[in-house]
Length: 535
Image (tube, one colour):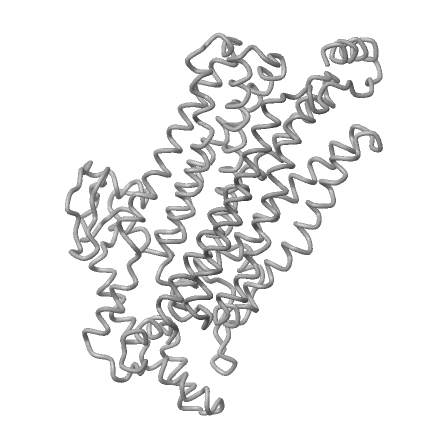
């Protein structure tokens, strides 16, 4: 049995590094395609202001990308150092998408970023535009393979457990890659990045307009970002609904926790707008409900019943009992792999093996044969994640999403009417919106990962048995070290971002005119001369 404190500290360390890293990821995903959109307009129209926009926003993108890489490198190593049993158990499956991400997507992205930065004078406009699109493609492919790996943890597809090797083995790569959870989560996460980048550009552009600085660049950037953002906001809400629908099938306990639904309600069930769930009392101490709304939201029907937590626990208690023979058979097979009776017993009960593993935490000396009904009930209740955290993280995420949609609708109306620079109150509001998409993304990450508990791999491998056997002192020291280092990274990012934003586009390279396009030489040359005079 691994020390529970070591498991808790391992979870906190991975959560801290992931949350820090995810502060950089959404902006990288979104800014890459927004830069491609701006450069497309530049190549199409030949207007130098769009080249200047690509230069300026590209520098902020590079700052974010560099620090995002620095914070992300350690996470893959943490699987081996802090989660060694997990790595051995699912390494054959989990390692494949991570290896593809590193060898294909990350190297592709990193290589083409170099060409994007240093290739303006060495590549034609169309070649440079292609490079920028390849950077965007590489960034999003990195997210794809990482979310394929995460999708296996949420809904294990395309693999089976080998009782002889005691490892999960890949049986279908297409099933792993095209898992509904992985694909929907990839699109949802990528579009959330587009929303993040759109608000980032809108907020900074509004800050410039409010101060009367770089008005042409700010107004054009704001327009591109507003149109980009309103479409992305609609997409992220739609895909979020689809992801919730899929999650209801794969993880009913997560869904019940998200809605703080303790008892199964007759369809159509009421929706808890706000509630105060109590895990210890197995009920909501307070709830404000809207009748008949939950069922159509979750099931897209009026008559499909949504199981409550108490019914889920009762069903999981049955699965815990059914997992006992699977664990017993596995112990025999670990010593005698050819035992035909044990193999037959394992085959009959293997679908509930993970629930038998959950019981080992409470059984005397880890022997599930000695487990009492009380032990089984404890293991069954363990299958329910933290309801309070899940309920409020989900609602904050949705609330932030609706707030951003409203912001983008207003931003689009003002920019289409060409009057955003005259809406002083809106220009003052926009910079304060910049943290909102990051908060929404973090709440979404908490909803997904806390809701998966108590599993590392849902239904197969409990978190309590996945960690490495480190000392408490080692884990505490490394946790403090990572938090300190990553806080420094955040401080560096903020300093560099604020510094370059205050300088503005012209003071750090955006003012030099690009090479004139055929047929537009006179106009571009004149514009370039004006910009050089301003510098």
